Image 1 (cartoon, rainbow, N blue to C red):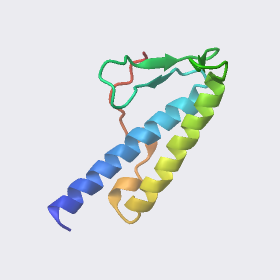
Image 2 (image 1 turned 90 degrees about the vertical axis):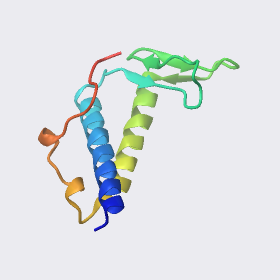
Image 3 (image 1 turned 30 degrees about the vertical axis):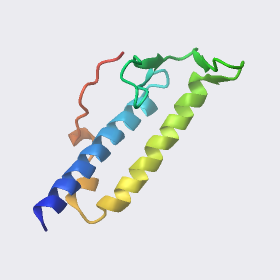
Length: 109
């Protein structure tokens, strides 16, 4: 196995672990805040959406409530985890128990 392959496998494994921890956190706490950052924008502050809140379009009355955004986010996490599991199949990186994983900054916004 080449060094580049090993490094990319480690990076994928680390991403997978972070996603698994985030998914676990959201599944255990149905009211955990969702925090977002607008990619490509350096001036936009992070957006934190909490239970009982909703995003509303600036141009219409269309709303995306917390529960809808939470479900979309959970499905996105699960989908990305499945992709990573496929990429990591047969390596050490994909199968560590969640108790052995650590997620970076766990502070709540």
